[in-house]
Image (cartoon, rainbow, N blue to C red; front, side, top):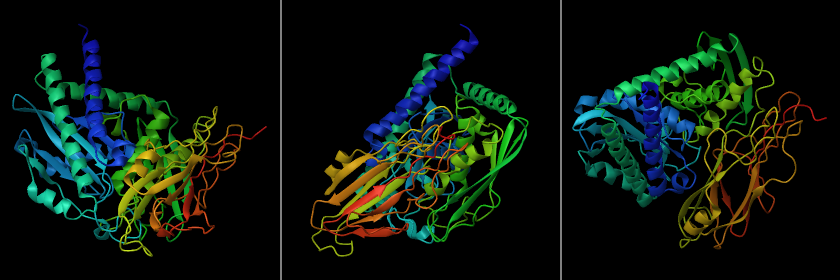
Amino acid sequence: MNKKLVQQILWNRLIAVVEEQANVLLKTAFGTITREAGDLSAGVYDTKGRMLAQAVTGTPGHVNTMAAAVAHFLERFPAHTLKPGDVLVTNDPWLGTGHLFDFVTVTPAFLKKKLIGFFASTCHVIDIGGRGFVAEATSVYEEGLYVPHMKLMDAGKRNPTLFAILMGNVREPTQVRGDLLSLVSCNEVATRRLAAMLEEFGLSELDTLGEYIVSTSRESMRAAIRKLPSGTWRAAMTLDGYESPVELKAALAVSDGAIHVDYAGTSAASRFGINSPKCYTDAYTSFGVKCIVAPGIPNNAGSLETVSVSAPEDSIVNPLRPRAVTARHLIGQMLPELVFGCFEEPLKGQVPAEGAGSIWILGLSGGPQVEGAKPDARRFNALSIGIGGMGARPAKHGLSSTAFPSGVGAIPVEVTEALSPLLFRRRELADGPGGEGRQRGGKGTVIEVENTEPAPFSVACATFDRRHNPARGRAGGMDGRVGRVGLASGKVLPGKETYVVPAGDCLVAEMPGGGGYGKKS
C-alpha cells in the first residue's frame, strides 16, 4: 500500500482515538460546564511530550496550553520512571491552563510494557475552594486549592491523601471527585485504543508517525505564512477592566515562515483576578493567528512552533506569581480579536469585525452565606454561560450567540433548574439589530433568572466585559451593542464584583453583540 495513504489512514485513526477520549470525558463528567458546555480538551503526545493530535471537542485555551503542559510534567516525572496505571495531575495556573479551576491529567500509554506516548486531558471543575469563581481576590492564594505536579494514580491505585485534601477543601466534593475520575477514565480508554491501533497495523511505537505529523504540520504552516507579506502590523483594544480600563496592544511581525506577536505597551497586571498567565496568552494568540493564516492545518506541536509570543513581565497578559487569575479568560479570549486587528492592514477585506470575545460566566449561588438569607436557605452553586455575538464577516452577517473563540456551548436551562431552585424566565436573542453595516454583527443572548424560593441569591460578575467598550466595526461598519447587567427592579450592577439579587427580584443580563462590517448602503 502507498506509504502516504497508510500515513493518512493512521492519522485518521489517531483523530478517532482522541475524539473517543474527549467523548468519554464528555459523557462521564459530573460538572455541567464539562458535560453540557464542552469546556474540556483531550490530546495525544509522543514519548518526548510533543502534542500530535487533539480532539475537535474542546477549547483552544485548554488544548493549546495543554500542548506545553505535558513537558512540565516530564521535567518532574521523567518518562522512564512512569509505570502502567500512573496518572499525573496539576492545576498550576502558570504551568497548566491558566487558573486553579482546571485540572490537567497526563497518563503514559504502553504497548507490551514499552512506553509509546502520553494522553492528556483537562476540564473545568465547579469549585476549587477559596473565594469561588469571582475576581475579587488579590492573590492566587485566596482563589482556591493549588495542587502541584503529583500522582493522582500510582500504578492504578488512587492517591488517598490527595483525594482527601481535595474533598475537604471544595464546596462540591462529589462533583469534583467525579470530574477527576472522568479525566482518569478518558485517558485510560485512549491508552487502550492507541495500543490496539498500533498492534492492528503491526507497529511497535508511535514516534515515527509522530515525527511525520509534526514535521508535515510545521512545514505546511510555514508555507502558509510565507504567502503573507512580510512586515510588522499593530493593533490596540480597550476593555472595561476591573479597577481601571485595560489597554491591550500587539505588534505582529511576519518573517520567513514564522510569526511573532509582541504585547509591549499592554496594561500592567491588575490587582484583581482578571490576569491572563503567559501560557493562556500564548494559547489564544496562536489560535488567533491560525484562524487567519491556516485554519485547515492540524493543530499540534509542529504548527504551534511557528508562532512565538513575548509579553512584558507582570503585565495583564503575563502576570507573575502570586497574581490572582481566576477570570483570566476575560483577557485571554479577547486576544484573537486583537490578532485579527493586526491582520486588517495586510489582508484588507478578509478580516471580520470584532466580536463579543470572552464569554460571560454567571457564577450563581445561594444559601445562608448570601447576605440577607435565612439559615434554612437552600445551598447551591451553579454556572450558566452567557454568549455574545460574533463580528460581521466581509461577505456574511456575524453569527449570533456564538462563543468565539472559546467554542463552548451554553448549559441548558433545564439542567441548571434541575440542580438548583433557579428559574430562567428568559433566554433569548437580544432585541434590535447587532452592529449595523453592509453585514450586521451577531446578536448576544439575554438571560433573566430568579430564585423560586423566597431567598436572595448571588451572582459573580467576574467575567462581564464590553459594557463600556463595545466590539468595534470594521471597514466602516458600526460598533456592536454593549452588554448590560441589572435587576428587573431597575438597579444596574456596574462592576465585576459579586452582587446579591434580593428575594423576589430577577437578574437580567444582556450579552454584548458583534461589530458590523462595511458601510451600509
